[in-house]
Amino acid sequence: MLSMEELRRMQKQDIMELDRKKLANAKDVVIDMEKSVEGRIQSFIEQTGNPFAQNVGEYIVQVGYREDTNEQLDDRMVLLLRRMAQLTLPKPPGEEQEGWE
Image (cartoon, rainbow, N blue to C red; front, top):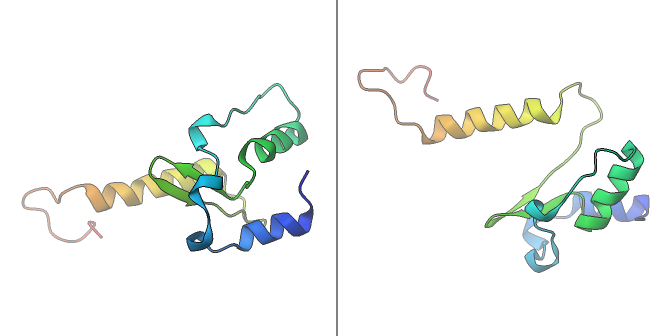
């Protein structure tokens, strides 16, 4: 198990300094929902090596965790997808710029 000091170091590491070859592929990580929360956390850390960064396709994804919020990961993922959709969807013909930020 990683020490708190090691976890803090990983959390603060600059994404540009991460070595892609040393990161786990997100698609290879399996979470056994039959395990306790502590067991799932331990398994996740063992599988990833770095719980704050993983390879996702051709990208390195670095995540952070906040203690001062009631939002769930699902809430943040929905927000991310909405923002991505706004960036990739063309403006409908005749639509004004408003609402298409």
